[in-house]
Image 1 (cartoon, helix red, strand yellow):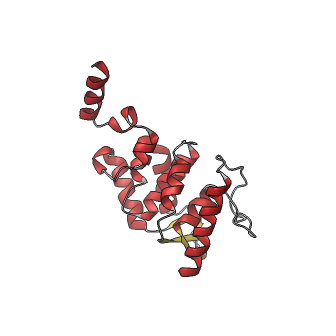
Image 2 (cartoon, rainbow, N blue to C red):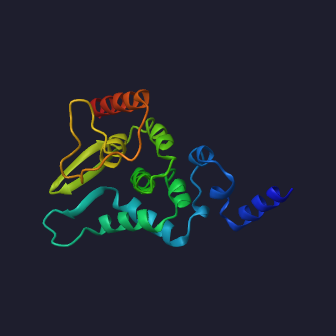
Image 3 (cartoon, rainbow, N blue to C red):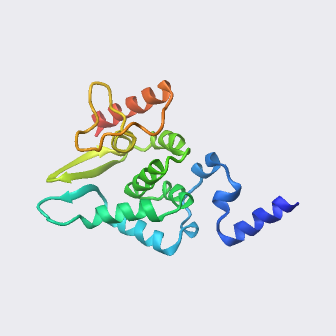
Length: 187
């Protein structure tokens, strides 16, 4: 009886997501902006409007790109529960930034989310300095965030070398890699 009352009280307070749900339930939910603080929702909207992921310096600008700063702010200021909600945002770029934030926090939901991302065929705009390229969103999550190399390739050289924070079963690696190759060729 106490647990039920406790969960109901948390639901009313708007923080039910992290207190009573499992990571698997949370990663399966639909996007609900009511679960986000106003400042996080504003950042997510701005990132949605940027509509690309870029590195710190872009083009010939001498200062840090504003979209890069917003991305870092969202990853650091959003709670884990807010990042989990944002992995369901309608904007693919926002989903990826939230995923990257969860990865940086070594959240155990990351392998579940990468599996969900396998069905997303969208491509994103990735800008590094003067170079802009369109890549499958799954490739960004797997290579650029998780730092796994695709067969016959290496992790892009501009990324800070790091050991992947998560190990994935061989079958999951193979499945993700096959999807990325398929999305590359169909794009």
